[in-house]
Image (cartoon, rainbow, N blue to C red; front, side, top):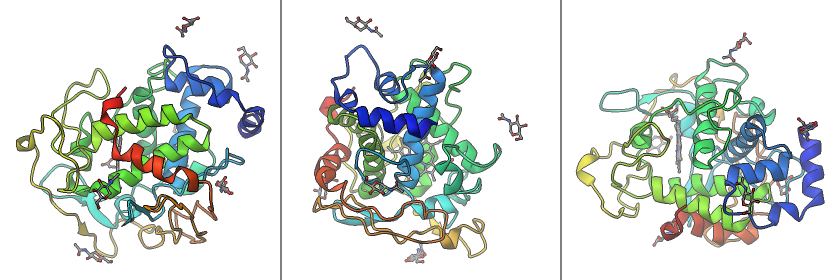
Length: 322
Ligand code: HEM
Ligand SMILES: *[C@@H]1O[C@H](CO)[C@@H](O)[C@H](O)[C@H]1NC(C)=O
Ligand SMILES: *[C@@H]1O[C@H](CO)[C@@H](O)[C@H](O)[C@H]1NC(C)=O
Ligand SMILES: *[C@@H]1O[C@H](CO)[C@@H](O)[C@H](O)[C@H]1NC(C)=O
Ligand SMILES: *[C@@H]1O[C@H](CO)[C@@H](O)[C@H](O)[C@H]1NC(C)=O
Ligand SMILES: *[C@@H]1O[C@H](CO)[C@@H](O)[C@H](O)[C@H]1NC(C)=O
Ligand SMILES: *[C@@H]1O[C@H](CO)[C@@H](O)[C@H](O)[C@H]1NC(C)=O
């Protein structure tokens, strides 16, 4: 169904790489290119594909030949090893539930990767996973300016207005945030999103969330201004107009106790090596773990030729901000 059409459209090619008119948003343009009818429902579907792919790695067959390791898969960014899964499994006490330190929360409690591979957020609609994934669809839909955003089939973002608040007890550094942004960019690349559009998205994400001490700003109207820095360690570039006094001292997350965080903790670390490497070689070796993050099997090549430019995207071209 969806994927057959997807494949057919990609096979027809050309179209996806054509220049996007400046009066059509990235969301609307690629919805039309990949799913034909530019409806709110199809826009939400596009965001589901994009976010699910960024999280678990490429799972649609075929794509344009770009491998996406995925946020849950360990990898390297700019020569630094990165492992983000423990923030999602409850292995780290890194969730801000109020208070002065983080709590252990399992965000893969809605079936893990399996429902994502079926283009769903979770196998239920009450889990932490369900809320996290649907919030991400809506949040990125707002950022990419989907024209159907906030229509009945494209729910408005209902999460926190402050990305700093959400992520503060994760104590994220430049490589971790860079890796995350690179996975989003790679997911777009795997669907044939043009490099100029990837650059624009990467620059926006980098400018909004990867600059230490950035001043309050509004990301999703009409939520209002709030602190947005996700990258808060000392190796994160200092924002223009930095207001470090508004940010709390960085608190490192503790390891959760063995029983905390649910049953996915121990198995969620896939053995796959990510494709975003400092050398730009981008080879991934296949993982075959049985954990919730095991959705990224063999991924070779693909990322190779785009390794450096994606790093540049994640490194930030703030001047190109959309
Ligand atoms: C540009 C970078 C990033 C963006 C735009 C982003 C965006 C978001 C959004 C919109 C949410 C949902 C918030 C809500 O429901 O209120 C979220 C939650 C979360 N993010 Fe990020 N994120 C980024 C980087 C990262 C990184 C590097 C990690 C590291 C593992 C991470 C881990 C998480 C986790 C664990 C949650 C769930 C937290 C909770 O609901 O309390 N994020 N993120
Ligand atoms: C964008 O501009 C073109 C040419 O100026 C016009 O034909 C088209 O209708 C516009 N599209 C939208 C969505 O406004
Ligand atoms: C697009 O919408 C039209 C009219 O609603 C419908 O007839 C057509 O089947 C749709 N095409 C696709 C590919 O969804
Ligand atoms: C991911 O993409 C790569 C490159 O196109 C491909 O070789 C691999 O089979 C894909 N993985 C899945 C699970 O679709
Ligand atoms: C949640 O799932 C239940 C059972 O599958 C269903 O009856 C309900 O309508 C769903 N609610 C939402 C908001 O999707
Ligand atoms: C958490 O555990 C890992 C290995 O399981 C260890 O390398 C790390 O130092 C621990 N961190 C803390 C804060 O205890
Ligand atoms: C990569 O690391 C070097 C130093 O280790 C740093 O100067 C550079 O800014 C980093 N690049 C990115 C894109 O994070």
